[in-house]
Length: 451
Image 1 (cartoon, helix red, strand yellow):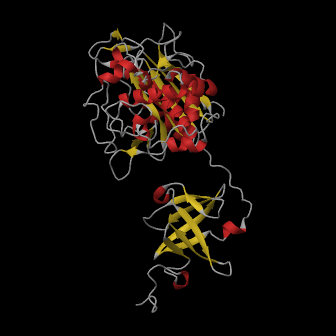
Image 2 (cartoon, helix red, strand yellow):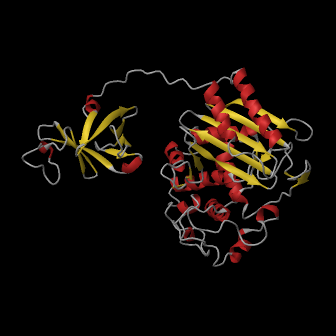
Image 3 (cartoon, one colour):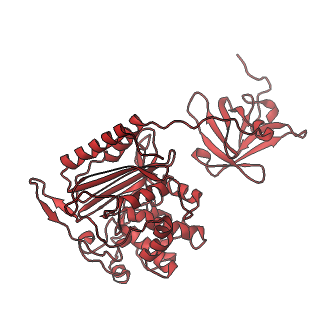
């Protein structure tokens, strides 16, 4: 992918220039990623007297959680744990032993947001062996699974889970299994030069206060890592689907599925398994925000068109929530993606037989053929249950999403081999509304349709 056009670059630069000036940020770096590469990088402000570069380190805060989550999912794929396992099976002795691994990954376990003791982000941490006895009856705040409640402590527990399974600390496991294979050579748990200093900006004066930085130890899996714009761009490409062999594509897709969403008829934000989710307009983004005293960062990726955006700043607060979606809007306005060229597929008589209109009772649906031996079933002209399906070895089709995710679609044939109807988890889809020849459950009135 070539760099963005000059006019696009100017518009992107203006957006971050306005942000840095109006939000009074000591420095701000941002990038746009397309097809796995940085298509635009921009920076404003100073780090050590010079403009930030693609290799300037910033602390990325809770983006650390996503990297820890990848190792947890690798353990699941290896068969070492199940996402429905209670954390007590792997890290016994907590007041929340019944909370599942999946609930910790998705912040639905009901744990308190912060660990006991002093403000952990601004004070030296303690080993897990010292933290564990401090966890008391106040650790659970909600019934597990009841609601989304963000928990830094939950990722402290997941970091300990990783350490116990790998026989090393969480950071070494993340470095060996995630950072090194993806080429994130400038992503570390403690800062290395050149790096930005974290500042708080006085709310009523243009002066700075340096923020402290410590090793959070047991709480480090919640937000310890430092990275660079170049490395975070590679991470955006990973989240968008360029897994580099670190995870199976299906596992990464599972992490991007919403486990919990904001309330409302149409969700605009949510959380998967270690990944935050957002739906600004037509896009479905996955990534994570990050904040630690003196630092803010966010990375979003859109798997649909392999696009990513990120920013890094050395300020405790101030960056607007719309900065990255604004950068995406600039990109969409100035350089909208061209659709892939249409080309005919190789004909498959067995699949062509399934395509076309079907009826669930009187409701019309369309069954369309997709690439890679997949089907989509969508309602025609009104609300209904839409899902995609993928072919199975036994001739059935497995639901991939929507209402029928995980359910089986089975073509049913007559004795002569011709196609009679579709059985979708007991629901019968027929070629005509309530086709009496298809054995509709409950039968069809012998007098047929009446006036």
